[in-house]
Length: 151
Image (cartoon, rainbow, N blue to C red; front, side, top):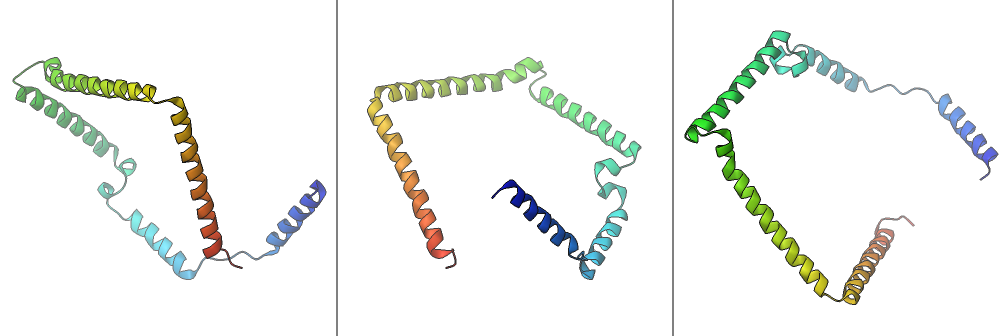
């Protein structure tokens, strides 16, 4: 299609759509939306979003949250026998080090196994998977055409 024909088609469609009357929302929808807006405005402040809370309530919430977090940290340190934070974190860090060592060993094993497989087999496996994917795509397209496309 040439550019001029494309522009004429676009202008024709634009004029046709502009000539259509505006559609009004159903009365029931309009009433429901207005009722939902009114109900939202009449909610108490603690049931609205945090932004709509009074400034004093927001500040109190933040201070209270900080106090609770500090109390939790102090309780955890006291449960650890008054140990320093580094001593408390030593056990989880040791676990993390063990997990890293295990994953590195698994990665080395997989690398050794992968390097021991002949490259022709790997290329063959990749080609086989590609063919199976193409077959699946073709079967899906054929099934779609057979069952869903109207004739």
